[in-house]
Image (cartoon, rainbow, N blue to C red; front, side, top):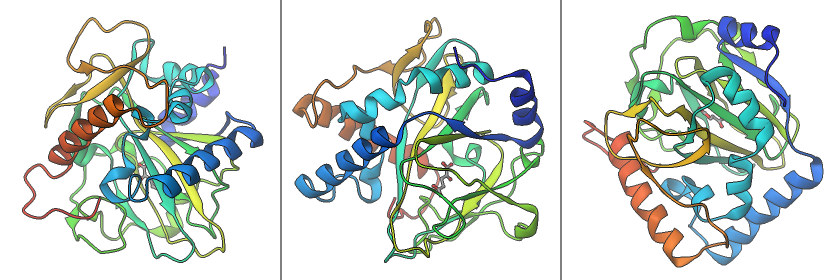
Length: 275
Ligand SMILES: O=C(O)CCC(=O)C(=O)O
């Protein structure tokens, strides 16, 4: 078992996140990167823009990471033993692009209530200040949800370009991770990330999020998988795990899931962005 220690749990409660946790070997992260490159080559546009979501439904490689027992042990320490995977997202920042993530709180537009959930960010490549790693505003999860301006900037990787203005950068901490390491963050922590100024790709695979079975989706419909324990609440539709890359049935499940997710993220919005 690799459950978090009591010190780590206290750190999560105090700071709103915990990192780094060692999860995968270098060989494994190379395999993940190859899977991404294969999909990009064979199915261009499939994991771009809105399509960057739910890759775990069409790729056994990403399915296995989402169900990784080391990750689940750590997640169990935070949300308990009955765990569902309700979504995944690839956050890729290529060196020739200006992509960034404005400061935001995940809980603002995601519709998951109560907040018995946690987001896991796995570094597929190293993530550091040069290539635009996440920055966390420690302790900000203890406050209420803040006002988010909806900016729809072209290079913002968030759906509406939702932005909490005037976050003091000097009070934020970079989450520096080596490939194969993970961070876990709280639904209400204020976080964001700058552009990639390096010469290589920055790739994060984000399980967004692991939810307790008691967590409802108050803005729409979700397709979940059982990661651990039992689901006695039965609030969501369960879907099967993929056994081959890009199986036709899995592709149509993913399409439905993406359409529903888009409705959730843009609920009440007059405009639709790129993501
Ligand atoms: O990958 C990033 O830079 C930001 C990801 C993020 O905001 C999240 O995982 O909640």
